[in-house]
Length: 307
Image (cartoon, rainbow, N blue to C red; front, side):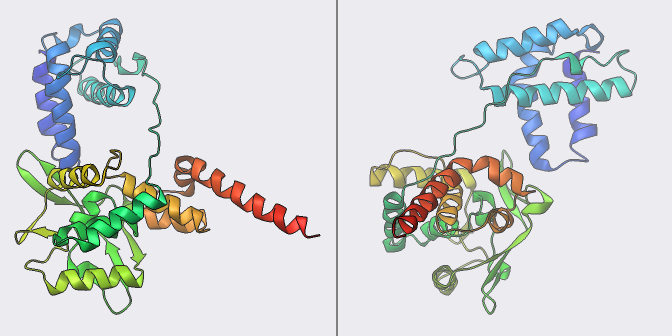
């Protein structure tokens, strides 16, 4: 059996029925964008650790199918995950005599640099969004004060907001697929959470509801908004304000950074962000915390100076 034949069987029978559609779509893109062209014509039983490693190295050197530059270490690690999972299943089913996926040397994962907006940039973004005729831009301000991921924010319905207790229930997310926009459960179980809403944000949502034409908080022409479309809107907003480009996820990082600067404890922040544990929060925002510690130590020094 050719490896590409097995990959298709694996995707349709062992991934699609049991994992999230989002995972299936991601794995399918990896298979057809990278693996089929590189290893697909090989017989499944003829794959070797050396052949797999050569393939991984080629991805690092020239794996980008658009630019032919190397893929990032994180992207290559995603490919390795698909290789290992598909070969493990093939081994368990007896299609290959030996599991060789664990012999692949993974590239070192590079933690992405956390980027957030300065206080001045944040104020400028907020001012533009709140004064705009496009009410869908309110979603940007909501993210700045709740730390929501873009998929979580675009999946919000008015039924998720308790206007009496001023809390927001995060119980779903959305993402784009070739077939269109899909609603799904959140990224992880810990992503299901309750977020208390500051009064100005609650009032903002009330304004949205007053002028709404559908159940979703963020709409465009009476329809929910696709993620890529909203990301593009954000990119154009930054360009118009002459603010250096940052991904939409930087709004979430900005929320976390401002929260730490205000003295919020890590446990509370971790729960608001929907992290699995506080270690994730600590590791991700250690630089922001260090700046806060410096400020606290300087305040302490001023107190001591009065002694």
